[in-house]
Length: 413
Ligand SMILES: *Cc1c(COP(=O)(O)O)cnc(C)c1O
Image (cartoon, rainbow, N blue to C red; front, side):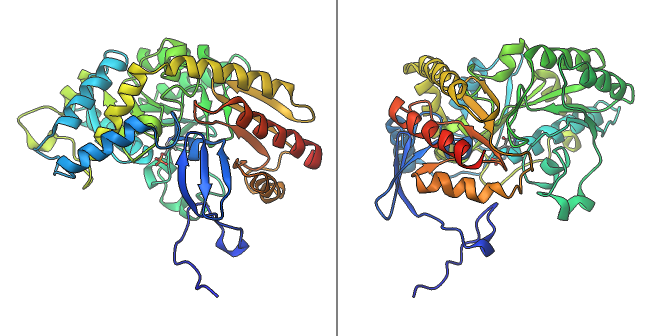
């Protein structure tokens, strides 16, 4: 008998003794396990893998950088990959975003964004602290990220520590309910609104119209409320465009990027800000600097991986792959029978199977096992099943995913 693993997994109830497969290598849209199975990665390993696992150009960049410089303090020091990446990001992302602050994960990108917003108002001599958010939002699992995200079973234990926010109702129809609530909240002079543009991911792949996003942005601008776009999931082509904000013709004051920033290879995040937000912190007064750092800020190997990701976007037909995948997703999700609320936006497709019972739905573990048994990495959120694969997935693998969803609908529907 082997001793139990000391590893404590995230979002895993170890008491259920569900199998935890050991993955040895990945290539393209597939993962390979120790026991010889080939698993189709239909969720991009939790929404990060964009071009496929172990993309050769990104792996080569990591190898090259590992030979040169592994890590360097980033307070008062710099290095080529961080400099080039910042320039590359500014070129690729919309103006006037002009400053890049690095961190390590989507959660920290959000913490940085919130701290930038509060620092901006404090340094201008008109302190503001209230943050507005959207119902069902998700912005990470740190205390700040949880505070601006939906309250629920995931964070009940920590609720007493979470700070108070203004929560706008999720848009219904043309979203007037949300816009009215936003306009009312803006009267009290909040510091910022943080939103996931077009898709609320962890909230259950909930979509809303680009026109509503554009209206929210306009209301914020009219009331001088900073607009933070958390594109940690939606960025890097997921919704069909590089940024979801693009579809609404919107540029945020602060933009959070992570997940696909390195093509999904190694951890890195970037929070981009406008010249006004940077200028509010730039001074000869040390007390006005931006007080945030983590040990591995702008790790050179991670920056080299992200730089290689930018090159992949420049040199390979990434946008064509996204368009092809989006068309295939739309055709397949539309062809399913016996599912509810089938929907698609760009490369993200989702539907519901069985009754609506939330994240801890009884059907959850059975659904997960259904897909696991078919060598598919699909991780339903309750009875919400979604497909968000790497852009390189081929037709046969995608067909296998949808055949399994159809079978699940027949079995559990
Ligand atoms: C995943 C996610 C985060 C958190 O990112 P981590 O890297 O898991 O910390 C934040 N915001 C959104 C919209 C996300 O989807």
